[in-house]
Image 1 (cartoon, rainbow, N blue to C red):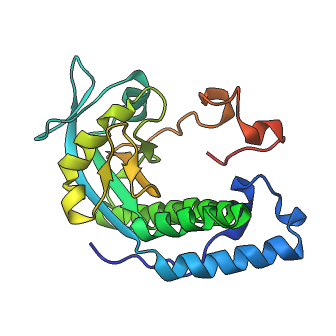
Image 2: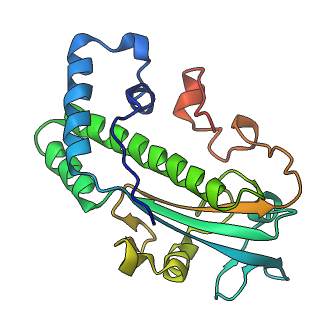
Length: 226
């Protein structure tokens, strides 16, 4: 895999994760965000891994051919409808990102929050860049949006098997705990469907989100851009 370099972070997006509008960012918070961005960029080691597999629907769900992995749930079946292949993708910022967030939490909770939200932004930017590379590798295919393990009714308990299929623990140091939490924490696992036919835009957003009843963005009259 080619290296992916992240040289700057979307601070506006990080502020939104913090529940702050860009227009509400005062001089002190702006300075903290600048300092935390520099600190985070100096330690992260963006890494990613993906593999493309043929997929086939069976009685249990969507089987990833030549592996032991079957993706179960109605949502992932709808997501991959019409797709003949699926890309399994995982990304991580490295354990050092987790460490500086943890250390900051012992001294300054605002700094820790800023680092945490900036790191969340960074891993999404990493996913976006990895997705562009996938598009370059499979130009003849239409691609779905990336569907995270644990999203909707796709069980988060599939994390370990998903990572093992990609050999992620050995290749990029991405592991999962017994409670299915990824380590390093600022990491993502996702499925992207590939189809030779046009993919109809999937229903996304507040109307179909399982968190719509408790979403902090909706309470503020905003949304998460999903």
